Length: 251
Picture (cartoon, one colour):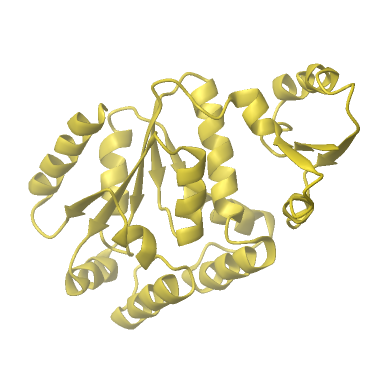
């Protein structure tokens, strides 16, 4: 038996939906089950049965390998300079996918204000309820769509967890470069206290660090990063490091 999973990547727009009948014709000789937007890891549970073969139709539509695709994913603790690094590349015209944007969009749908007090518990509850890969699955869909649209240089902004890194690496094993942005804690906290949008006190910043390290296992992706950028000097020095990365990665 085969299970055909039609997730968000397939049901995203009318063009993708119109491709579904042709996909089904390829399996007309096999007994099949069709799963539409599987809820709460239903498909993962079915994978435990050896007689069941799972076919991810996102890969059927968009392909698991994209020729000449390169992805830079930035990771780092709050205040390290991830947003500045991402802005450096987006200002050059490269598209981005934003991990935090998935959370903020979900908060908007839930009718919650975008505040630090709301975001932290909401983010953790979302991952607890739907799994640690709930955000990265959306990001992978977005990358597939960008690549299918002809974008072959993509920036991933704000990877959080070890589970997210593993999922992204599995989806794009040869295309992904993980870059950790690091800075001394006292410098990060100073930046956070002076930023114009959602500033944090030193205590709030410390609590966020602790939550990201303990609950989200953010230390893992930072430790295993392919490249490190030290953001403790001038913006000119930071930009020079990013320019060197861009040349090395073919951006």
